Image (cartoon, rainbow, N blue to C red):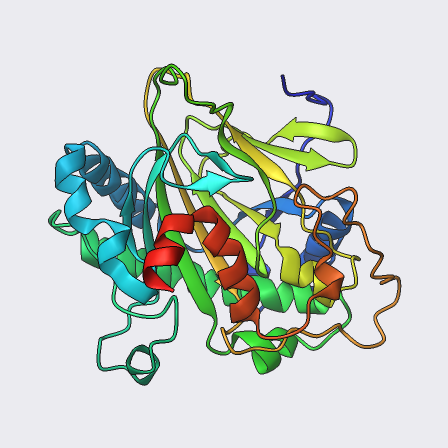
Length: 337
């Protein structure tokens, strides 16, 4: 059972001044900083992403996930090769070694087969496998573009909250960010007999810098704050944002990557969730932010869900990512990498 602290809730921040670059930007940044110090999660409103675009993506995603599984398997991840794109069925993704009770479509920045990075066979770069649902491709690309732009603005706010120049992360890590995008569907149905699935997604932290999540009206997200597990229910017109392991490392633990999980969906209708991961460039060398007050970089591996010490990592972000993702899709790792 979830031990929920009902008196706690995540902050809701109107980021319109940050998005527009107008007066009030510094106040928004201070609110983001307070949220990152407290528990690493916050909602954003005033983000400028078209509500009609979000609704269109929901509608088309339902159309796709309602297709028979054998039809959806025409776009299975094994066909995406090193780009790690495509569909996976229920139980096809692992968290902490256990299958998640969800199906999904893996997407990312659209790169043609002729792109130099694709020609160089760089993992997690390449063309997407777009299902044959009318309007789906264009809607996915428009949504990714809009939320990626929001990611740039939010990282400016995070930089300002740390007393850095607004361009700090863009200059070092995210001028060309690694964008990974997921469409997840959590069916509402009993767990098959003999399958050990306690959660829609088990406890985990995210790997990179910033996750920007749209969740539909069903909900189910739970966050492990210092005060205990709390729910992060849907708020219409908002995104839920959380920081990842690499921002934890960069800030020496001042901004913590917070564990979270998703409850098994028993609502009676399918649940949609769209996380976009705004991460450092694959080749970026993730470093501590020099001179950052209050950053102790303590080894907290004994308390972490995966027993990992993010502060001990050194090297390319892409190597860190591949090591993590390979645990999520071990069969694909063996086949592709």
